[in-house]
Image (tube, rainbow, N blue to C red):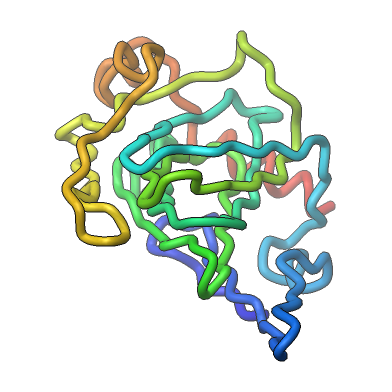
Length: 205
């Protein structure tokens, strides 16, 4: 298992070692030791989520108040998604920037997003099945979103599915009315970089 930190600090791409034979494939998609070495603290699992999405479904950009926010360890068990991390931490050197990882049932990579980061993904195949390990349960009053098509963020979403067929983004009603990054900042809805870093430091103590 190898970890590669993304251009948004606090997020990693994780590539597992797969063991295959004529019967199929086995892999460990999460290991506590390598995770703690990369992140600087243990992963405190509080909940495990699963979503199934048709091709073209776009979920996000979602984030939660810090503390405790909600760190996510995400993989795709079936199909393929373009998974995106967005730095929504006010005061961060990479504020407003994004990076992405292709999660699919071939390389079987995962992505980890630490507390305070925004998360979104675009489904590239029908019935794409995404598994999330998260560090806190759903809390409606602390959950927020940024419009995933916000031109200021400028995410380059796919225009075709995994098989090269054209797709149009399908957003939930909630995501359709989410504010832009600038509006969320003006409303004081975004986490602060210094407060997020202080919280992350406390996790490693």
